[in-house]
Image (cartoon, rainbow, N blue to C red; front, side, top):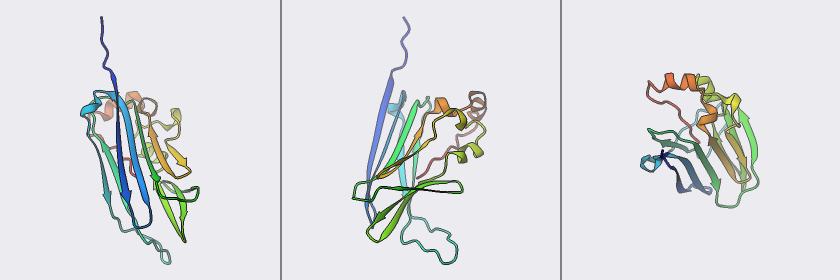
Length: 170
């Protein structure tokens, strides 16, 4: 009789209080042996580089890290407003997928790198066989990665010889 590793599902939630709104960050992933895999979410204030005449009242960046020595079958991350906002309006730009929300007299935007950016950095990232990883929600944005569909297996073996460098930030 052969026993296979059982698939474990893990979850992470964090509440974020920003000067203009409250948000919830949620992550979930599944795979064998993942109960020992730490997920960390780091928040950092950033100073944007803007063209003359543009201004921003507040910026922050989140970076999530999941360290695993075993296969991750599915990874989902979402950032959603818990305070009332208008339905989001999709925005895009070079290397950007984002969504804007009206909050009072202000405009709040949640964004991440677009789906093509990892493919440009990593030859093993194969977007053509996968569902687009960015989802637009009425109250936020989500990122969904299924490594089995995204990675070109012959190139992934080559990349596993080096330290992993895939970064997904919101």
